Image (cartoon, rainbow, N blue to C red; front, side, top):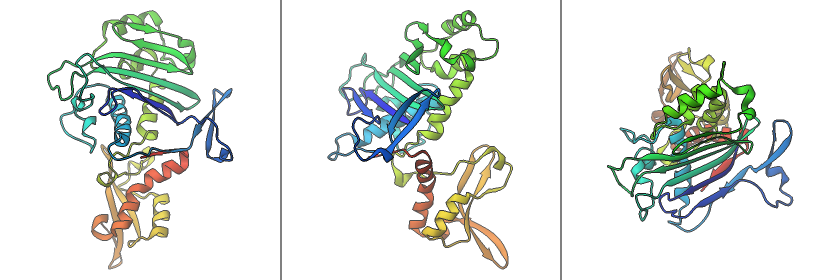
Length: 323
């Protein structure tokens, strides 16, 4: 669950923005608080939902956009521009669109995120130099990257590399771990455009901890930046990848209550890409036939099908952010 997100020098936010999901005083609303144990000891409390409100062009979209950019950088593992545009949030792919329009070349864009997952509180901080707004030629660099787990510094990477308290992750280190060897290799292989987290930390220190962080960003930190341009597909388990069609039982139960013209909704499976666009399964001459859902279902049903995977995750995890 998300606890806190900060960013600075991102688009309209020249100064630091601090968005918190940690409750202060909540009376008669305890049912809306999520409580989790940290290593079966201390309890962490977080809001199950939050609303961002304000006048038009006040920066609401940029808050969600900043989260989207950090998520993309962590999943990609680097700060390079992508060759193609993959999302309505163009800043995710074209990082030269990120800095505040008035920023100078030596002013970094900074992100910080704190979240809970699998008994740990993670705090990941990243500062990058991207030059001025729309600076296509700037030689961008990571100038600071930090990982804290349960408030203990694990590593800090800037001009050099500082390794902190690894006893926090003793049970999660790689096999045959050697602190001296890991530090020597890591220091000589730092890349200014590659995250230490995805490279050296994953391979030399703890793949298990990296996997927890990566899976949280991929599967729990869902960002819907421009909903009418996005299609949210269900997650297919490894057991279903050998099938030709995937039927999400929860989706179909909900869709039939909402209003479904066909017998049910199914997804074609591509072993490389996961699931494709939804199909309406209808019966014709005693046989089941699959047609693209946007040929057969109403617009309202299509919108429901597209948003249901997110609704299901929000209900299951009891947390969402809306702007």
